[in-house]
Amino acid sequence: MSVQNVLNTIQEKGIEWVDFRFVDLSGRAHHISLPASEVEEETFVNGVAFDGSSIPGFRGIEESDMVMMPDPESSFVDPFTAHPTIVIMCNIFTPDGERYERDPRSIAQKAEEYLQSSGVGTAAFFAPESEFFIFDDVRYESTQNSSSFFVDSEEAHWNSNRKDEGGNLSFKVKHKGGYVPVAPTDSQQDIRSEMCRLLIESGLRIERHHHEVATAGQGEINFRFDTLTKTADNLLKYKYIVQNTARQYGKVATFMPKPLFGDNGSGMHVHQSIFNGDTPLFWEKGSYANLSETALNYIGGILYHAPALIAITNPSTNSFKRLVPGYEAPVNLVFSKGNRSAAVRIPVAAVTPKGCRIEFRTPDSTANPYLAFAAMLLAGLDGIKKKIDPRALGYGPLDKNIYELSDADKAEIRSVPGSLDEALDALEADFEFLTEGGVFSKDFIDNYIALHRDEAKAVSIRIHPHEYSLYFDL
Image (cartoon, rainbow, N blue to C red):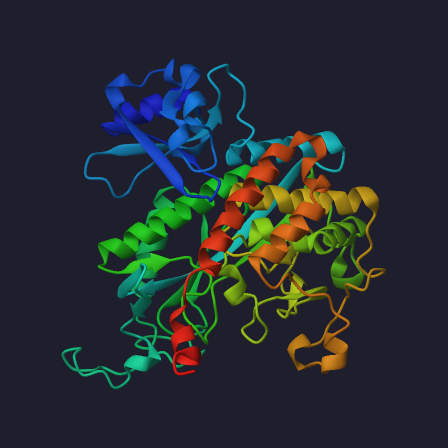
């Protein structure tokens, strides 16, 4: 959508407010709303000022003036506001007109520019499968003398004997028994369908939705792939619409990777491929999983850099509550066709040359999508540039259920880092692939690591409720 199209939409739809949004380092969106009467062509040239010092990880108060530059291609009409509002994503610039090097959206765009300058291809396509939970009740606190959380869902298996539901209607979702059951076990068909309706109205092409494996309201909605930055925009839109639709239903949606102990967590499996014009570069008929050497080298880059990459694709302490064996969490750094126990899966069912792709299954939705997609692309391009062969490095293919291998065989397979601190250590030791083409700066990486080390420390020094169960009577 061009600037003129945005201005036409404002007139045609009676838009009262224009909501300018940007994303911080963590992936949270922020916004400033202007009356539509104050928005004109010059707004898209001059931008919208904001205070960068109030955003964690951006700038100090002595250099806090920053500018949001709207991207009209990202606009959509907000489906939730009482006053008609159009939303526009923005890039961040300094007052001098320079692209801000810590702006995640600008980093995503620089990754796309680097791909085009590399000579490998013209576009990278991404399609995230971002899972979520819909709960009925969420409470938590962390204070000096108290630490607790409580979540509840009317369809959770632990409520099979609950008496205060006005009559328990049973049909609860069994432990790890939630994968695609029909109603009445799946009680959230309508709410997911409403999410999809609003997503379609907002410009996304929806492919399907369904209940996921875990009890207590785990779901998934898949939307169509697009280029890197557009897909990151779409993922922010997706999370916004999922969370606000849940709220309209009196429920709460979370993309937290592991909100429940002992059941499947929520991942963000990321499908990706590279094209040169209309030509898919990952397809070669008759080879293993019909993968080209380019695709294999891309996989090699992903798996070789995975320990560092995971600091960006799984950037929360909670991420590593999911990345443990036994819950379909892909902790094994190998590749395989159709094998969901491998970190990199190659889909093989109903795949055409243009649909040939790789799926990195390790990420989760605490990742900032602009940073995560950019980092994955750069890791893959490094693999192509250096001709990293995953077969030669022992990364597979491994077409077995890895969880059922012997301990001796499992010991031969490299695994993901065991904690956020370990992943950040790996990123400190292996970051050069991210700075190729000036996509990520060393300043950005240092700042990113420092912010996430603070988060890891904040969790590690706090008393965990389970420690009372373990140690109080000693």
